[in-house]
Length: 160
Image 1 (cartoon, rainbow, N blue to C red):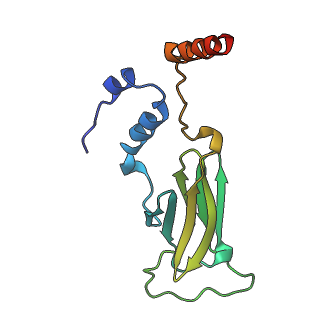
Image 2 (cartoon, helix red, strand yellow):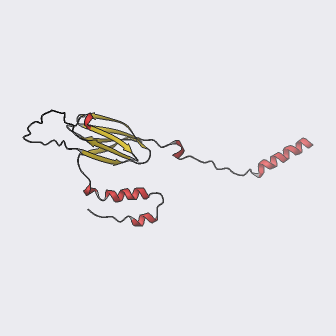
Image 3 (cartoon, helix red, strand yellow):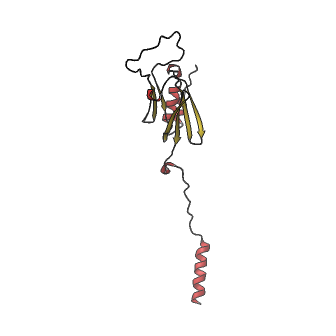
């Protein structure tokens, strides 16, 4: 994999330090775990969905947690006490424990999760507070001399 040096961009930007550090982390993708596979899709202008393939896991085997802009999905098969494990001739469906973390942008909230056909769907929405949204500032201008001249003319007419 090619290595890109982003240091020249640090000098010409303000407030994007987190973005560049995240890009630096992405460069080390080879070291990140690949199980379970997942998709990230955009479902609306400010809506997203993360779909994780969790075949063989029940909803009781999964845990979803958000903390400090990090979404963590954990899975661990729970074996009932006294239950006998079947003799496996071949096991192609992985049922090992996992933990997958996703870094969320600011103001992204989890709105729901559903387990359907072996896929865990986690819905996200970005809700920017009203105070953080851009707003237009009106520009005031000085009163023109025409308005002053009109007031003077009106006073002169009243005096006459």
